[in-house]
Image (tube, rainbow, N blue to C red):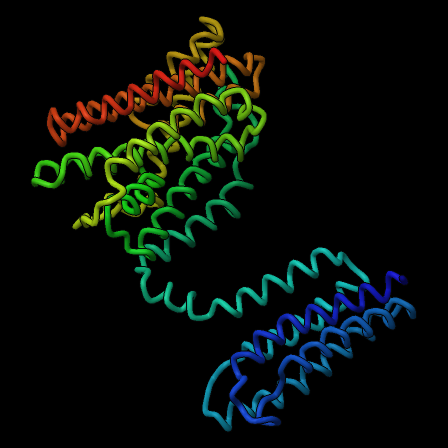
Length: 412
């Protein structure tokens, strides 16, 4: 079949997809009372494709520009009359129709994959109106500002930073440090937003979602609940689930940054997370208790906290590189374990950056596993401080079992 026919068919399909959403919203309106529906949007996509073919055949981009401007003007006039009649203020359909024409042209003479993806994205965005409006109502201004900060730090901050090591040992690359810091903060922020939107109630959802932000914070919050008289087994189960999510979070960072390392340490991480998840589910699955206060109440993308994280990350990275140069590759195990006492993300990201050097990847993987084990032990100490001996003992039995079985799996 002629590729041109397939591309024109894609242009028509893009318009029809977006028209399906637009038409569904006005499905109860009588015929002839709306500017555009499925058929009009479908033909708009096809129209954009035809314009692109003519413009390409005559090497005259002005043909497409003139056709696009004419279509936009006609559509805007009809849309204006409709909004005047219904006394509403919205330009969404007009922008959607203009996008359909452009995507139709792109599908025929440009990257058809980008056109298809763009059409699907616009359709999903239009269909998510209620969800997005509900999101804006539930988020505070500080959270919206944090979202904008995340975008600015990524799109504006990163290009301004030098992408080279500026210390004698090659450990402090400002671009890499900031990129990985923003990545870790973004994962935490996504978890925070999920908690705000879902409003977690109960040990299982609160622990799972809260640990995306900080498993240490979840452990401390559940310990405080033990002090207040809540069920010891439920709180230990929630802390185990938080530990499981902490391991999965590290696995996600590995997959995004150094996927080649995942295979070498997948088995012990998988075993440890399954053990913690199973124990946590057994202890807390049948509970209906509510946590009065979310363990992740603080916004994780706070600028001050992010700068502290970046400074600590840069310090640990530089220290690791210096120690490796003077004392050999084995010193990365020491720096990773020390850093993991406070924050497992800093330890893991620092170890991953060492993977770009001549250090054996197996040693880097062992450093990450040691960091996870050290962080698990530090959570036991935090549990003793916040929830008492019984809470700490319960978490210790589960955590040490997971660590032991994970270590044993290395022999396989």
